[in-house]
Image (tube, rainbow, N blue to C red; front, side, top):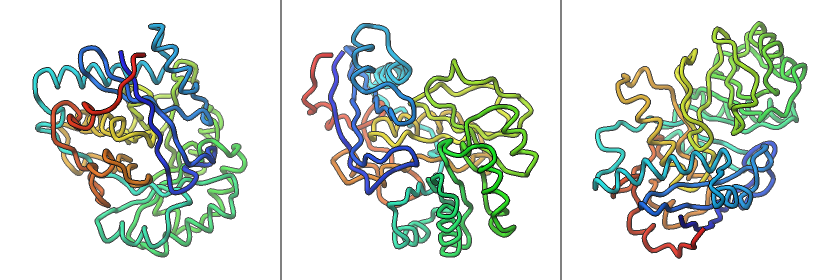
Length: 316
């Protein structure tokens, strides 16, 4: 197996728990010619990149390594057949991912390009979160809204935030993701208060509390972290982990494959256009501009054939 370390530079902090704007990860290449991506978020509980690579080298991959290897296997099989993984698939549209570094001017451009919803990366500063939501919602009156707190609130603060929202804003919210750490008791209280909830399980799915099947929670599915769960209460929202376009396209493929036989009206907006958060590079340039539907590069497997061939790979 081979690897290549990369870095992506964002416009600013990308969530409530991560201040670092330079995100580091690694592409992997199997002996069979398939590619995958590992980009940890240690601030959110992931192992470090070095720990992931060391474990992969020893044949005992950690959660992100397991998923990257699955991506590389799937990608490699398609490349061996000379076909694109996206042949015959419809690419789901996405919300606009809006960390604090995204400017109001950019949001107006996104609206003009066809985005229909925004996802705000919120912090524990409730007043600031409410102020930003109010401002952005007034700028794009037709948009729906999604907020992601990355579990940085407690149950009481989550309830306080929900109660502080005026009715006209509550009616425009699709969901609030990870307002506080998950527990059945806490989240039942939030549901009873009328809060629409979404859950991102993170990498360590084996040690998460069990979810009641009748608890109306939308699942955020990140293919870089987990396989798509079965028996979901609502159609899942697929998102990237804000990683390299190879990892981004793995999420795009998993979403498109999951919804292969669904009508467009049955597919929720996903979070698959995160290349827009980073400074351009040769890979990002091929992902398309400000469009709610991520562009799929040509080539076999996940694409990028020529770019991937010319990377200076190292033996893992």
